[in-house]
Image: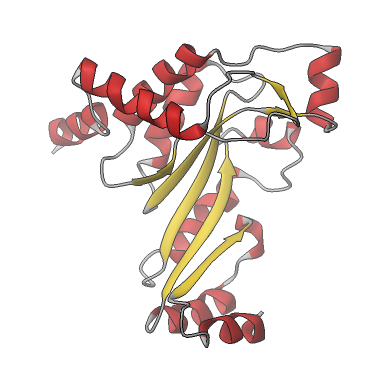
Length: 212
């Protein structure tokens, strides 16, 4: 790992590293090394969470728990390393309020940025087989926009949003079929938030101020 990272950082056009990993694959030794690199370069670690619900994580065969994600984030915090996480909205079995509560949970942890994906089912996957045998609800276009807007209002305003929707080539996508690109989804979310006069952290920051 060190050899590959250091070779990449020697390139004159490389300013840093964005490292995607599982929360159960990190330890103090690796973080100490990345902390050293972070003194000279931009270093970001992306921890895939997908859901704070351990039952959901087990069904997805993620192989890690929410507690392991939380521990990884806490271990990484304070080292000068940018922390990003990923969540998926619309996972089978999760209710709307449970998805929205995910924003409140994430807001309690020292993450710097977040990538939000909607559940999209790719052909020839285990999930696709399950969906075809026993169809479960997937988001309609406007339904997802409405959910994301509420999600963002409950999310701490200091968490930078790197992504608001996932994207798969139409040839490989089983569901949902929206017929729009990711940039159009993001634009529609932004316009609807302006129309409603709401913003990221509107409800989360209000709760924080009330507590203080």
